Image (tube, rainbow, N blue to C red; front, side, top):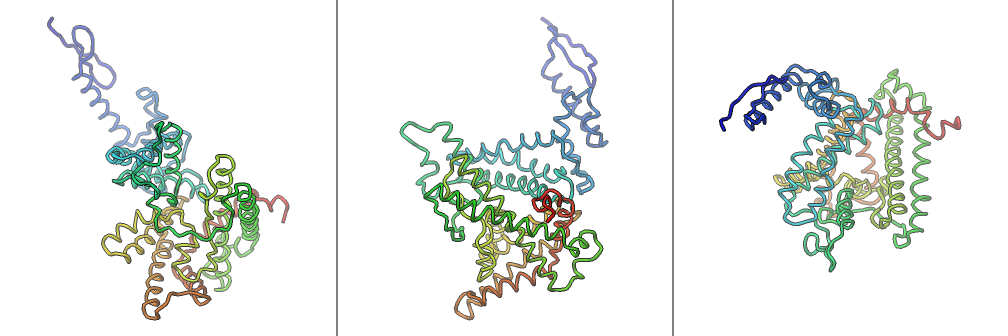
Length: 458
């Protein structure tokens, strides 16, 4: 039977049919190419919203978030970020869905190429969404920090596990995944538990990538679940909340702090003693706030989900008693983002410049990520004061190493504690980390009515 072709006008192009009336492969390819060119010209080159193409794209609410992110690349700035909608959240949840799968594959040998393909196809899109979408109103610091850091952290971990040739091996395994193997094989529940354990571990307590991690002393009885729960609640969660809320309300009711928030006076115009006290209180606010959230999550995980108490060591030690900068940053301060800083900065610079490059790269990465976190709250430019504060901490490590070389012993004791406090106060003062204070005060000014002491007029 001889074939014949005819053209039917259908919207954006033409469709070629054979004698049976069925479109041929060539005609479908040509039509798809023409349709794509028209949509690209309308949406990207002319900047038209995807919602204006409702007759052509009936599922435009699903497509809209992706075009918002792509359009942001044409003029990346705070002004061109779009406000989040329910469809943006759905899009992000769709993008992060492969993360547990990557973790699942990272616990199995011979999956390197699959993990790399998944990471490269999802992590860049997730980072684009973090930058292009305004997830919470500006100056809502906790919410913006949560969304910004969560997105960046998941994307970085996707790339890390994707490019790790050997996967994620536990410290007590002979070979990758050997602990999962039993006589009856592996159940689906065990496989999912294994994958989500890797997904949610930040410090790598049971994994090879967590080697070298130093944790502060924990006095809680991890062998007794009930005693551990009670001690965590009474000695960690509740005290941290009380201290946090008290300082928070002092900030709200301080005339000087309020004047700074209203831009009536400049923080730099305060006396040195006033600025030092405010910075010290702000540091306590950060420590107690993070500790309270961490310990509440740990209580839920141990009590409701049945995880082992030893999987939740203390978040902070006693930073105010640290006798060296190394002890302050590597032990007493939280190590949640330690692996992130090493992967994104420490290891790359360490490859070229040895141990000095490892330390410098980790602190530079810390400064950049903290600066991006502030940008997520609405700052127009990267906070170079924050970047310089963390970067200069590497110089303090060098000075301590020189002290050890010339004096024959490490920095320590009461002299070491004085040195740590002096170094931190001076670097905070002369690197302009005041951006944190301005943002914090502006948030407190609007959030006063939502906290405990405010309801009791205290």
